[in-house]
Length: 108
Length: 477
Image (cartoon, rainbow over all chains, first blue to last red; front, side, top):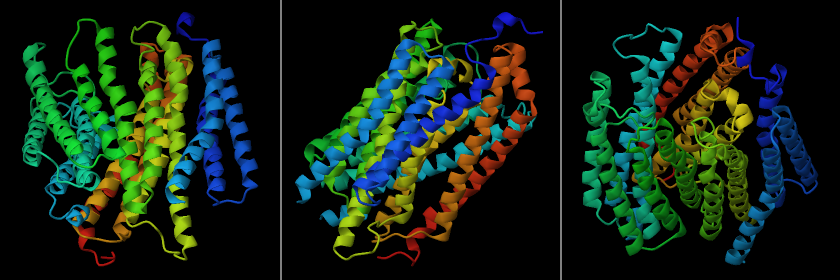
């Protein structure tokens, strides 16, 4: 018989799988967002794919929200997750812009 | 004069690099072999009991991993230095002497691990058998030897970097390698408080792996993209500086996720959570970089009417692309699984950690270093365009497929431990054993062993390919 005091109640038993899946999908969807965004920018994909890229970012943000909610993160960690979501949407824009400017400056 | 450096013939630095790569490949084989022994012991606990116990097999498996990567990293630097600086490496004779000292020290340490194994609980053991800290168990005499070798290596790098052309790649490597060598010192002293001891020990482990090694990979990726794609140096180096800023920005204080449960103050929860959440961002940015360079370089060639691939070393480039994906998956996805303290409370010390460790080390480091082996084979054999051989395709597929399979198996095992050992049974002694006696855990261990055999077979094919592909007529010369 297990002493009930040692059972940790923070996360419900049924929530572990959704937590692991959603945290994996954060980066999988994030990868799709970044990949499609860059592929559109370097003209490997048609421009309308950009909508798909942003859809993947929305899915990323939702997964972050879901993961954080199921884990019952505190106020500070919740803010950290929001910062990560904002960072993710801005990052490919910033990196692409800087690389493209350097590219133009050196080749044209 | 410069051509001899680019082909790899006639450059003593590149010759030394091939020595480092060869020894690294041998240690890579040893790492896999002892990993197989440890994996077999999970399935058959009596296997080699009393001769080569799990604790020893695990020590050699993990230390061989760290050391083969360090050898391959040193080799990579000695390989690229003449290309980047335009001169022969300064102090190359000392570099060669240090190689033999380093290699001999590693052989002695491994023999002691194998045949002496344990000693009395006194200073003699610390000095001559093992220091006992996970991942860096080498005895203290070898520690000092490593410091001397690392200082000599950093000295060669600095003297060459200052005398020759100073590219962004070499500048980043100079800064990175001095941090890499210096951080090792944090794992060389003892305190009588286990929390304080672990606090410093993590400086070596985390700040190597999630800061200095990642920056090293960024520098090698930059060199590889210039070498294999003809990517524009300014663009690649611009990326490198961005990556350095992001990796150090998130990676240094990402250290906090190792401080959750070792007795450090609670503010590490917040620091660890914030910077761990940011740590995947540089890995995502790596996607932009590889796609950008590949797409732009291929696109500009196609505009000129050249539809041929811009890649001049297909096996190496395959491993570099696997690095971008592997880093993202292993360090990113499998790291993010359990990086926040709320979930890490349950996953810490389970096979989840092992799944993450295996895929991250493979994806982030083994891949790109194998890519460097192929760049060296291309250079030393004067190959203009290096193509895939049947062996290189089989080796890549088996090693990568085996590693993915092993990671999935370990993840399933970790999940069982989280649910049974931690969530249901509250991390009790009984929970620890119940979690490991269930069918799912045991079958996962069977699959881990099978996948280990797949990887080892892939390694044998890889070794055969590296030794023979240089003379294969399939390549353009």
